Image (tube, rainbow, N blue to C red; front, side):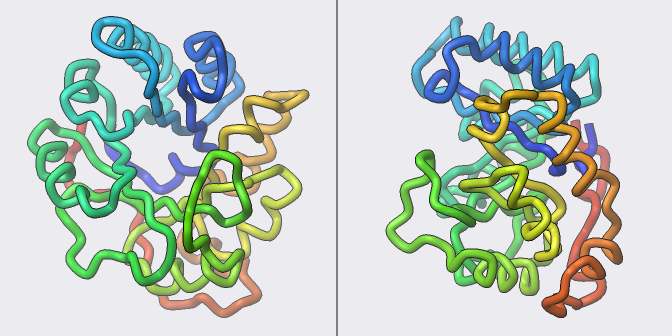
Length: 237
C-alpha cells in the first residue's frame, strides 16, 4: 500500500504492554475505522509474534488500513506489512534502507525540531512527534514544549507529522491547529467507553485533510506552502 498522509488520521499503537488481547482489540479498532495500526510488541517472540503480526496484517488488508511494525524489518517483510516504525531516530537511515529494499516505507519518532533529519532517507514517509502532552507510555528526558514545540516541528518538516503522547478526544481541536495530519494514541482508544465514537472523532478531525486545510486550520501562521508531502513517490508495498 502506498503511503498517504491521510493514513495518519487515527493511528493506534498496540501491543501486549497496552492491552491483554492484542488481536481482539486490533479487530475492534479496524472495524471502528482506524486508519493505521502500529504494532509495538515487546513481550511475544518468534512464531507467536509473527502469528499476531500476520493476523493484524490480514484484518488491516481487508479494510485497507495501513499496518506498520515497530523496529523489525524482517517481520514486516515476512507478513507483508506496509511499513516499519523506527523508534530510534539514530537508526532511521539503516532501517529505512532495509525497509525500502523490502518494498516498505518508514516513519520515525522524534522529540523536537532539532531532531528533524537534514538528509531524509528514501522511503521515509512521516515523523511522529512525542510527547505532545505528558504520557505514561513515553519517557522523555526533554519532552516537547507542548503545542508550541509541535508547531515548530511542523513549520520545519518536509514530511507529514503525526502527534503522539497524551492524546485525548478533547485535545484534538488544539492539535489539528498545529498543521499535523493525524494523531496517534494508546489510551484514547484502549480505554475508550465508545471506541466507534472515539475513532470517528479522530477521523472527522483529520480525515482527508489537504495541505491547504492543514495549514489553513491553524491560527499560528504555520504556512510554508509545499512543506508537506502527501505520498512517498513510487509504488511501495
